[in-house]
Image (cartoon, rainbow, N blue to C red; front, top):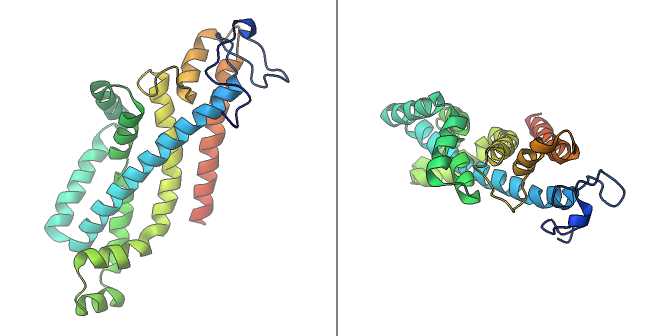
Length: 237
């Protein structure tokens, strides 16, 4: 409310389908609500969902990858075969099925995206842990009686965070696209709460009379995902 120029929920029947102008830079919708205000408010939802979902996936990926790489043998084989099985599922359709079963809500979307996006991180962490676990600093820690959990948390994971940060940054953009797609299909954030995907879904019905309803939310998604992709590339360098 403090950043957006108008109340994103406020209905104004005298300002229905106003084209972009100085007072409404992104126009208004069928209820006279300011599109720019709804985009700004909806950014909280999209970014919050994506950050929490990526946080869940990174946490899971780090744990599974570190345990698989550190212990190797049977543990590694079991965890990596489970990872391979998860990779064979078409992720978006799996998310669709789970969200449909659990019901559309912000919390369900965050959890489901997080639980289906950890496989790439797990593979990255496992590969680096396999290289690091036989290095001198790990052997010294074992000689001093450090526990496996301590070695993994204090010595191994901090040394594999570079690729993980890159993967997480790129994952935020992917999570935003997934959340927007779910909201577009009516399985994500529910009206009247603004979200970019829901705004796109509403705008598709009025493309011939109010192109701005879909254009500006779509542009917001594009620019945000592009920004996180560029940030990820910078970290990679």
